[in-house]
Image (cartoon, rainbow, N blue to C red; front, side):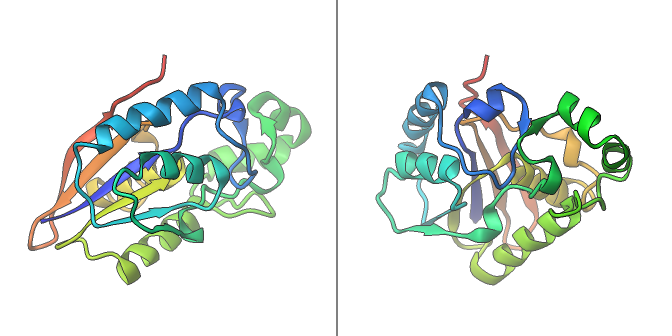
Length: 200
């Protein structure tokens, strides 16, 4: 039986400030470092064959910390967070003030709107699933993906809902772990969600 172990990166200042920052590259804050340490302790009890990470610093820092088997840490562009385009670096209120027309479209047609210079959740889900199809043996290997909220939500929605229908129904916390196992027929089973949740 294969498994996907999904690890969300630890907290950053932008998380705390509730800023949209998909591809903006920031490091973990002190809370995020503590969360990564706690996730590492959980990983000591989990076996895995491969570990992939988003190349963004917050994920890469987390991946280095939780890679208890010291396997090759493979960076994958496909595991980056959603690119928020013109919304990058702004909080919700700032977006409403700076881009009122775009905000209205983005929040009403969230599956398809690409933030002008970014991408939409459909494109995000497509790139992540392409990576899994190409490089991950879901039936026989245990693979760790250290990544972001959007990627984890896309995967959970795909496996346990229909396409993106469940995208907003999963709230993976910073530094938490989610485990999906797959039967021989490829049937997904959610073994754990928000394991080691460290948030307040």
